[in-house]
Image 1: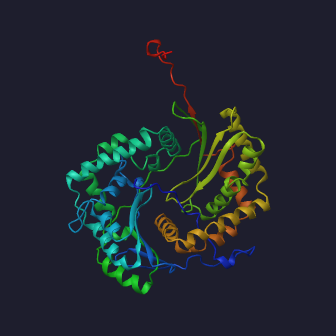
Image 2: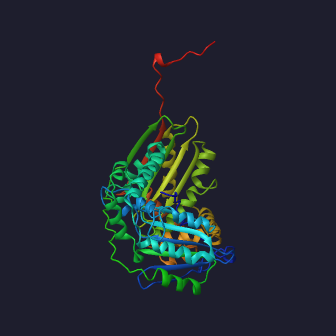
Image 3: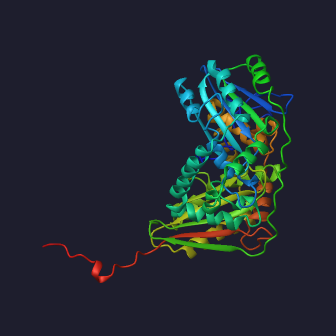
Length: 465
């Protein structure tokens, strides 16, 4: 993966004038403009005229979850090969040309999406649009470049997973959380399957999914719709639509038993506990997703959050703890608790304390003060996204690609402001009760140090006196 994407859906905001009110009015955040080309490609403009620069992003509705069985890593591999040239732009020249114009570019792959972006001066918009449209349909895939880039991808996996016990740990946790579902496969691919990928696999995947009617263009920055629309119609609108496969995925079956992964490695210095719950994404249940956002903020958003105050500050059972919800997905979302035990505290004690906090949440709910503070944090944090270039482009691109609407994004802070304490307690009882897991049992993982074996007597060297 060319960059590690930390999903940014919770970086929305209210207009500054509305933040002082106890009950925000239903106002748009970004005032985005949008239309759809005749070939089905969506176009979104988020105007920001503070500086003569733009972020140009093309989002494809395809990711690792759409790979055929036995071809894991293919979506990420294609992302790499998108930089390997067309008839107009030789291999390796795409990024070089962007840099020569004073810009920067990158790309990333996730389970549901693949995205490409350039940040550059606004007078270069037409050029980057032409370059991006060219590689939407005209990649060459020279055999020697396919094989050499595969080595790059395999080395990337070795560095991030084979040589990193944390990478292995989270990869195996994910496989347990999503049985019988494509989210169980790592985006970078299983090593043996990625090694077996061929040029034919790459070409077939590219031709199946890389089409304008499976893409969203988001431009954020110093440009008007009067300028953007004719450019998009001429450059992207000239690309014919193609039939694109459906997202036909298997589903996680109803389960009954909680599961535990214990992973030990000599390089681990600090133990870690991770618990993952499968919960609804925004695409699956908007109301519950909003409540889960607020719940995660109450429980885990900073040192004032309930988990930190109880387990770190008061009981001193953990040296650190996080509690986060990831709801931007086409299929299930996840809620993850991660904690490090304090010195001298064993993992069973820490896990028991976490269970106690979850029982308290389920049985007593959240206070009105906690609710109000959490909603304020979520709303206020988004000012930074609105005022940046890449933030809005990320929010709209990811959200629209996985099933959100323009209104879902524009009115997200207002919708957050309407979440009640009863809704928060309801989702806690439905999905986080350690005593009643229903058919969505959680998975807990321990990442532990492992003592190095003592050297054999003949390997011990005496130091010189």
